[in-house]
Structure formats: C-alpha cells, structure tokens
Image (cartoon, rainbow, N blue to C red; front, side):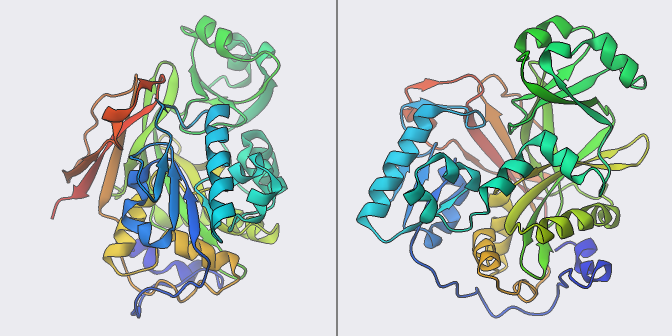
Length: 400
C-alpha cells in the first residue's frame, strides 16, 4: 500500500495493520465458481478462480459465455440481458455443482430462488436495496457523516429558480435518479439546459438533488468488511467527463493521487464502515467521495455494493505482489474469517484506465504514465452498438 495506508491501525482497534511478510496466496476452500460480470478483460488475469464466466463483452469460448448480439450500455437495465444471464446460469448450475459469484450481487435477486441459493457472497436483499438506492442511503447515513447539502424531490417539481432559492450559493445542480451507475442517470442541471433536462426527468420519479461543486476531486476506494475487521484499499481519483448533460464515469487513476488527504478520508469512512458492519453487511463495497477544493470538506457521494470498474487494477497489483485478489478476500469475509493477516505486505497500485463509450470517446491524458495496453473485448465481432455502449479501455502504467 502507499505509505498513508500503512498505519491505518492507528485509527481504530478494528482497522487492519499492514506490513510484514506473506506466505503466498491463501487457500480458499470452495466449490467451482461461475462468474457473472461485464467485461471479460477485467477478469482475464484471475481465471484460475472460475470454472465458467458469463460476461456482456468479450469473446465466446468453451469457458467464457458472452452476449454477442449487441454492444449494450451495461449501466442501464436490460431485460434481454437478464434473460441471457438467467438462461445460462440455470444451464450451468444444473449441469455442474458450481456456485455463482456476481460482479453486482444485487442482480441475483432478479432471478429465481435456485440461482439465489447458489450465489455466494450475497448480502440480504433488503440491505442491498437500502444501500444501492441513493436517496435511502443518504437518509440512512445522514446522522453519521457529511453529505453535500441535498434534497429529494419528484421530477415534476424540479425547477431551476426553485433550486436556486434552496441552494443560493450554486448556479449548477446535480440531479440523480435514485438508482443508476456510471453517471448515466446523473445530470448536470443549469439555467441554459433546463428545458432539455426537464423533458428527460420522469415527473413521478423521486430524484436526489444537490449543488454542483465545480472545483472538486472525485475519490473512490474499495473496502472489504468482515465480522470483526475490515480492509480499506488504496484510494484513486475518478475520471469524470461532462457529456450530453451527464456526468459520465470515464475511468480511474491510481497513479496521480498525491493530492488525496488519506487521513481525513479515513476519518470520514470509519463511521460508515462501523454502521455497515453493525447492520450485517459483509464483503466488498465501493465508496465514492468528493473533496470540495473551495472549502476543503470531504463528502460521501454514494456506496456501490459490488465490485467496481477499477477492481481489475487493484487485482493486477495484488497479483504482482503474490497477494490474494479481491474476489478471494471477499469470499473469506463471508466465511467469517479474520481479515487482519491476509495482507501483510506493502503494495501500490501503479495503474490507471480510461474507458471509451459510444458517444463518449474523447481521449484523456493520464500524467506520469505510459500506455500499457488497449483492450476492446472483441468489439469488431458485435453486430450493433447501443448509445453509450462500452467500446474499449486503455490501461496505463506508472512511469518508472
């Protein structure tokens, strides 16, 4: 870990202390696993953990099943994709003794009980619903931590002048649907685009609305929560692009993070982790935060009760250091194992990635790095592309 994570134990008796030596990868006893995710390229380095994989993007092989009709936007609900996943899962778990691990475990609750029963690392459906809904999550944690000032309001009541009266210090606003990922349901609302946004919003849907902090640093981290302890992984800067009045997630930078005040972020995260632990949440969770450069305040933005688009970069660093990957640590957390001795070796994540979408394919510069690899997950073999569907990603490595 970078030096600021080495002394995490100073902040809590339950915080993990890093350092020392590791005696190789942990032995995780389990049945064979079917992985259900998005990009085959994200898990190509960790195929040793899986018997079969089901992904939205990639090449079909004997062990990897991909949705090969249309390149879809995986951040939006898609009934055809659900049917594709459900059909293949039922076939695989009927023919084998495999269990299932989802990139996004909440999706297990879309399918029949047999699939849920075969899914490992699955939190209670009520908890996942509570935490993945941006409005209920804000309300649940409002007494424990700071959010940027916000209101919840139905789409039919959203008006620029009304918001200006509520948030007089702001000239722009963020409007978020209660559920959504990748920024595709997150809108930048201004006086100039008011008519456009109001036509998009569902009049009967509730939205989370807050002022837009223009000078900011968006931060992300992975956390694995066990019964008695937890691990906070290195922080990264998120790459966000404003495109078509949306705040689109374009990638992650673990390389240029010297501007991040780790101590203060840990102080923000600690009560969140303890509350998640107390209500029974276990395993992987992603956390998005923002640093307001005008006031130097740190705000929680949202929780992602799943693996993330940047998980594969952390796994790259873990593998290079002969350490267990996040999926293995996630399994151990659900088995009730102590996490305190899993990682006893410092490591950095010298990686960054940029994602390209249909309609959002501007190049982005990653400082202090060199282009390591470009991966398009078999793009040339797809018949058609949906708007804002995933095209490819560039992976950057820190300069020596």
